[in-house]
Image (cartoon, rainbow, N blue to C red; front, top):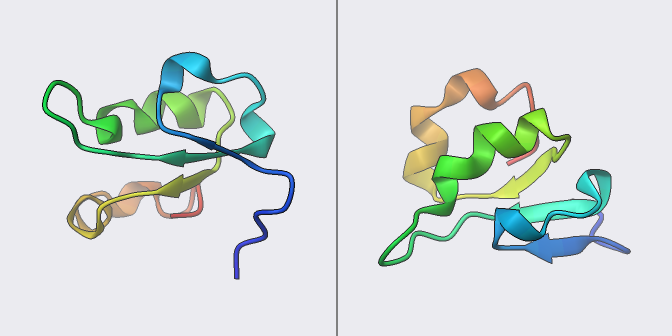
Length: 68
């Protein structure tokens, strides 16, 4: 089970302030798809994500890099 105590849920990568305490929720919207920002966020230190199952299945190379 994921420990969410003292974590920040983030849906807009522009507002990242503390990567180690962030859970990024990738939402596919009308103009942007949050999944497009995941690799950049991994490079910035975010390691926990909530993603669409189909996206997860298409990116096995990232499974060892972060928690999905």
